[in-house]
Length: 157
Image (cartoon, rainbow, N blue to C red):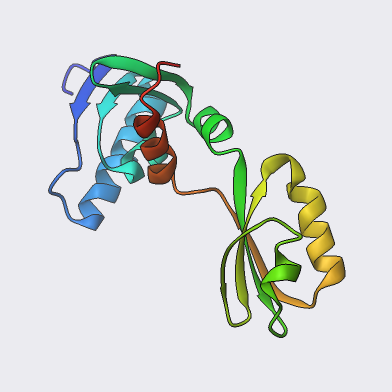
């Protein structure tokens, strides 16, 4: 990096590093990119590297490009849902909870639902109006799950 290259090619840059060293490498790369407007070509199996460093992703499967676009676009396109986890004041039946989305799990007073992104606002509003809720969390599906699904389909996109 002595000559401040405008393109960095990195293959698994955090492989074998402890957690603190991984964070330090990611921070350095973000700062290098910001300061020198360098392009960073990164190959990694660590989704934490990808989500921390990449805006644009290319997915290559068996030599074929199957996705080229924004990381957020990957989630929008291949995971058109969010996970809604609710902690209820008291137990609730699976039948009632299924009205709000696909019931993924129900353990005691904690339920996890899969809700389509376009229905999210209405569903959360209905949950808050209809049930006594102690806590509600909305999350994207894990990026590993989404990329795994893309690779399983194996379709060129």
